[in-house]
Image 1 (spheres, rainbow, N blue to C red):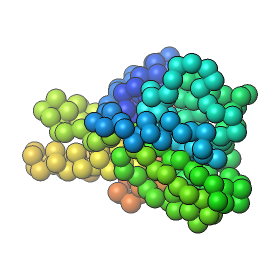
Image 2: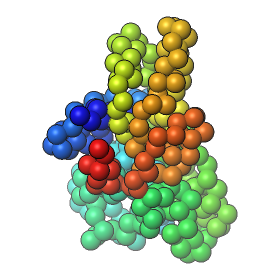
Image 3: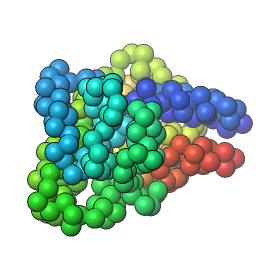
Length: 263
């Protein structure tokens, strides 16, 4: 009998996937490895959103960035200025836009063509960067993140504004979390990992658990199977010594298909 499916996304994104996993007859375990919280001062985000029409392109790095931004946009229609292109990195972000009523029928939405490489590098390759020269670009992301996207736009001659929409943090190793980790590592399971940051955070939590218990729980993680949507996360797993990895490409459909093909 297959083990559990451990879903490590932030809780808001994990619960819908958990329902679909359960519909496949698999046990779903929601274990958020990143806590998402609002910023104490949303002023810079609101200021950027107040002049959306000034930007040639707005790039959202994640579904959380989309939700954070739309929480501060007016509820009236139209909610998106005409002529402003949206750029997102994967199917999850497209779904988040759709949940806010933004679809390709009404707005120009660009994302990487290759579902297995839904990252900043491939987004830059997809976009017509030449048309951004001398124009303004807005990037909405978490409090910290890679500068590759912003650097790519600047290299193309664009003026770039980067604004934080939310805060993310690895949860603290509480006794309850330690107990859950021990239980999940006691048998082979499938772990859905959708963030390199979350995977690194998991390993740090396990190292902390090692030190507290004198047991090599990190070695136990090497016996677990990871299902990841992006090549960069697969590379992170290999760097951390985790070799049992299935790369699916972007989107829940591909994640679910990979789970269904597991023996």
